[in-house]
Length: 295
Image (cartoon, rainbow, N blue to C red; front, side, top):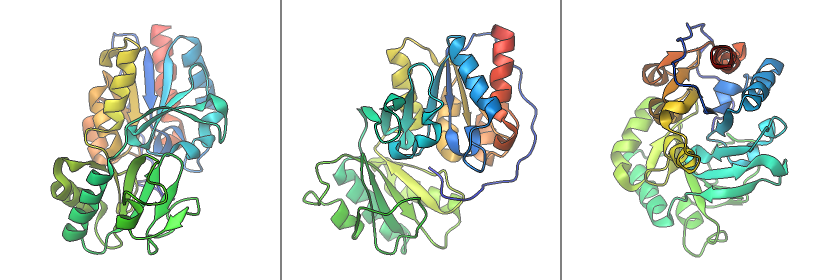
C-alpha cells in the first residue's frame, strides 16, 4: 500500500523475451505497476487484461491495499475477480462491486505478535508512529500523519488499539503500519526486520519511511502460492509484475517476473525481466507480447 507520492522517475527498460512455458496466471501489483501515477487504469491496460482472461489466463491483483481501496480496479474485473490484499493478509472476491467485497481467506496478524512488534520497534526506533489495519476498520495513534485517504475509526496508542478488550477486538488484524518521520525508508526497513525478527513479516511499498507489518510468513508470494496450489497452477506458469520491496518475494517465486521501469533497485535485482514504467503501460506491453507468442 502506498501513500500519495512517487518512488523514482519513469525510465524505459528493455523487455526480457518470454519463456517457453505458456502462462496460466498473471499476478500484478497495482500502485506504481498496473495503475498510472494518477491511479487510473489506461484503456490499453484494460484491453490487455480482458484479452488475457479471454485467452484463459487468470488475472490476480496482488496489492498492499486494503479491500476497501479496491474500487480503483473493481470495474475492470473479469473472470473470477479475486484479489490478494494487504500484502497477502486477505484474498477478496471483487465481484460484489464497491463496498460489497467478500473476504475469501484471511491470514491475520495475532494481537500478541502485533504487540510484540510495536514494543520491539518502539525500542529500536524511538518516535515511530502506528496505525492498525483490520478487515473492515482502520485505527491510528493520535500523532500518526495523514498519509491515507480516509478518516480513522478511532484514535489511541497502538497498545490500546491492539488490546484484547479493544473496541474492535473481534475483528482480525491484517497488518500494522509503522511510520517514522526522520529515518531513511530502506534503513528503517532493515532496522525493523532485525528488531522484530520472526514475530512478524515486515516490508514496505511507500516512498516514505512507512513500514507494513503482517503475520509471520504472510506475504504476497506465500498467499499467491496458496491460491495457485488450489488451482493446480505451478510457479513456472505464473507471470508477476511489481515495483517495490513488498513485491520482491512474489517476483522471485514466479516463473517469470517483470520489474517496472520505475522500480526500486531491490525489485530490479529480483525480477527475471524488465518492462517499461507504469505510466507507459508496462504491464500491458508484456501481456500483449505473451499473447502474441502463446496465442
